[in-house]
Each structure stands twice: as C-alpha cells, then as structure tokens.
Length: 285
Image 1 (cartoon, helix red, strand yellow):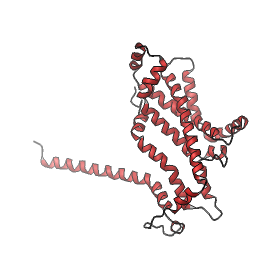
Image 2: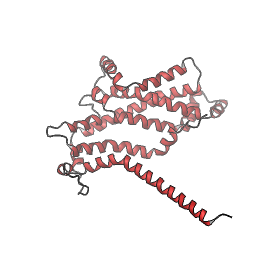
Image 3: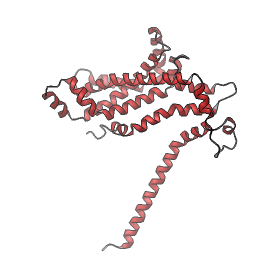
Image 4: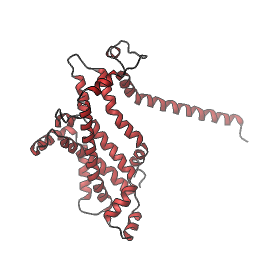
C-alpha cells in the first residue's frame, strides 16, 4: 500500500521540476529577445533620450526616427534592391539545388558523391576568400555593381545548403510512391514535379528561408559588388553610422528594425514548415 506522503513528495518534486523548466525557458527567451527589444526601445526614443545617463526605462515613445528613415529617398530603393537580390538568389538556389539534390538522392552516376562533397567544401570556404575572385570575374563579365552579381554571389553560398538539406528530404521519401507513379505511366519529370515536389514542400520552405537569411543579411558582398544605385538595406543601414556629428542611434535602430521585421514575419508564418523541413532525415537510419 503506497503512502500518501510518498505521493505528495512526488507531486512536489514534479511541480518543482516544472517550475525550474519554465524559469529556464523564460530566461532563455529574455536573453534571446533582449538585443531586439533594446534596439526597438532606441528606435522609439529621441536623440536626447538615447544619450541620457542613466538609460531611460520609462519614456513617451516617438515614431520620428521611422519617419526620418522612410522619408529619405534611399530607403525604398534599398528595400527594392534587397527584395530583388534576395528573391533572385532564393529562386536560383532552389531552381538549381532542388533538381541537383533529387538526382543525388535517386539517380546513379559516376562522381555523384564527389560532386556532393565538393559542394559542401564550397560552403565551408570563408566568404572573404572568394570575394576578390568573384569581383574580378564579375568585372570581366561586365556585371559588377549590378543586382545580378550580388544574387549570383549569394547563390554560390546558398546552393550547397539547398543540396545538403534537400538530399536528406528526398532520401526520406519512400521510393514506392515514385515507383507507383512510374507503373501508372508517369515520366521521371512528371513524377518529380507533380508528386515529389508537393510532398517535400516543408523542406523547400525551410531551405528557402535559410537562403533568404543569407541574402537579406549579408553586408560584405553587397558593400563591394554594388554601387549607390544598387545598394541593399544592410549597406544602407551602415551609412547611418557615418555622420559628421556622430552616430545617429535613433535612425540607425529604426532602420535596423525595418530590416529585420520582414524576415521575422516570414519565419513566423512559415514556422511549421521550417521545423518539419529542418528535421527531415534526422531519424533516418
């Protein structure tokens, strides 16, 4: 016969464990969100409030910094440049990487594994190591200082990630599904487009977001391969720290919030697909 004191002790132990779990999760969330919340608070302050000592914890928020950023003629073109560059890079990476990953997962041909590991090796290279060769190549092709050059540069780093993730996704997909379609008379291309791609949509959404993050946040390639007319938002945001009177912290924080908000919204909306896609192939034996 079990003692009531033993059951009470187990309940207290379970409640205590649950309490510390929630405390740990809350602490982790605060640590991760603190930089974003701090930037948000600066973007809602005036110049005097930003430089006040000690920092103000209670103040009347203002949107003047956002109005200043959006009223300048460079922000909207920079946003458009970022959308074109990031969108082009994502489309190129998926358009090339997804079929390549499928061929590596399903087809047999000489040098398949070699090509796969060469792609992964390209991703391991530091960006600065390929920046100068890319600059010289794009200059010789006459596409330097264009959006296309930046999109191509981002594709070279996103493509290995697409192949790496999608290869595992395709390997996780049962071959019997494709074999059934083949028996019904479907060609390899029809099976790939109409059956395989819809079933692997979570994986494609996940890698698309990863490619978007690479292209949206990069500063190094955009600062070297673009001109004033084609500069992206990270390069534009950096210009707020080059004023003669010092760093314009308010507009800088406001521009930073405007840059990261679209990516955060896309990640939240695609959260379900992102988790499923990145975990694909994790349990494969």
